[in-house]
Length: 304
Image 1: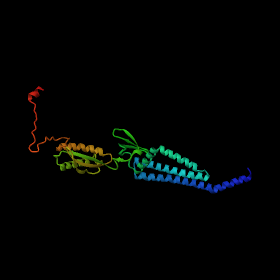
Image 2: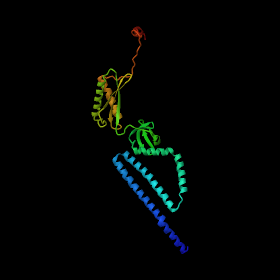
Image 3: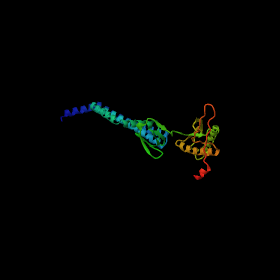
């Protein structure tokens, strides 16, 4: 190669380095700076979030969210920076962008349910509507939340069966253990009972339960008496509830039912079972017809 050609090549490299090369260097430095800032920002956010909401499930939730946000932003930074560098080098990006657009469209049509699951899972984690250890009802399934992933939620019901529910099919969440719970009671008593006395007895039973050392930490407030709820076919229904710690409403409810049954039996308060009153009818004017009851003779009874 002649010295003049070497000089021209060197001049061109120097010219490119002073223009496009400098811009490529600045883009690379900016990408490195943004990625470093993103890493530190996510670490800071996770530490603050974990401190505000302690607990293993919250730590796992914070890590999942920060990893998702970090990975998405990292991909965006690398993709944008890479295309800017390719453009400065002189690569025509139009065919590349067209191919990427067609590929993304095909993937989007083929993975609609997957994308829906991922987006729904992200917002479930972000909004903290469901946590590990909660008892929830989602998509017609009720159980204890054992694991929350970006795509699915795993529930275990009372019989031990595990359900895996895709996040994309969840349109509403019924959380029965969010912050606190209520043990709800619908107590039926006979129509002959004085409902005011029955309600006073229920309050006494609930207060004894609240003072019991075995349950005192599970009961948050005294019983709330809601009053006479309805007149059923064979009973007057009195409704009341007790505020409890999450997951404790069922144990408190069972113990309360046991004490109600024993106390009502001791005080002679009737808990009726369904029964019917037979009405024989009567003429428009006059008395109802007599009711005849046949009796078995002792001889017939003896022969039988």
